[in-house]
Length: 442
Image (cartoon, rainbow, N blue to C red; front, side, top):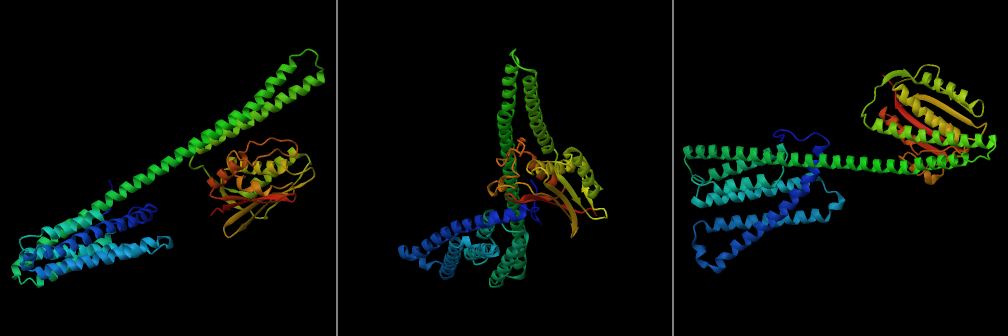
């Protein structure tokens, strides 16, 4: 267990733990306040049942202490009830903690007063004083500086009690020494309890995070199994059916070639799906990827040349970039894949002789990259689902090209690994633009 004697847990756990224990502090205040109010009221009513108690020494002072504790409990319960009723308005956190500190000090002071009553001075018995401090240390969580404030106020109250006790200087010094030891034990005990609860809270948060990761992995596994069951079963069914047709003897050479082409297409689609799944599985095992400083403009020129060769003039692929290099920390292979996916999508949904434009510029130490087309656009209902893994927004291209629903999810994953972000802007029948923002290399 890590001890937090002079500090707090690291962020974000520090803020989360404080937000957790403040409501708990208020609930404990409600419990102790109700108990203290019931006990003090019962003690105040006892002389009505047993009149001889009115003859007890220091009865007036004792009654005053009980009245003070009862009033403090009632006021604390009133403020706590007000905060509870208005919790949706996000009351200041310091107010809740100040209330717990004030009530804790009142409780300790009353216990100290009872100690004084026992023998007119605290020389021989500090039991109630110690009990009050231990109770506060066990019940409430305070930050280090808040604990020091409580210790200082308690030491001041103890000094005032001794001032009016009429003890000789030697007894005052001895009592101060005992009080110092008790307050030191209270400080240590309070910080130990704080550390124990903080460690327990952090462990719970880590377990919750692990559970979320397990659920995410389980969900991804189910999605992958769904893709395997659906997207791979269909091509293999097609292959099986076409193979059965090929076994017939009365097919013309043209029909045989057509069926063989269909088998080849099914195999290529299956290989594409398998490669996408393997890529995702490999990338999820890597928290970081190796990056190197390179000219993004040069990479875009390479992509443009490759796609112009493939398109053979069926689409107009335009590139716009500044004359001077734009440097970014990139993984060439993975970012090349991002660009290929985006251009491939643009080709699928842009009719023949349509325009696809790649544009990049620098703005405020950010590189702004756009891949746009004047194709059929994306329906509004599909846009929120576009970057989901195995997205339900997938659809066939204009030439019947099949989609695995993984490409844009991979793009987002790779862009984020580069420290960037990606979003989309589209209107039906007017085209689509993907915006990528990357940090410029220093």
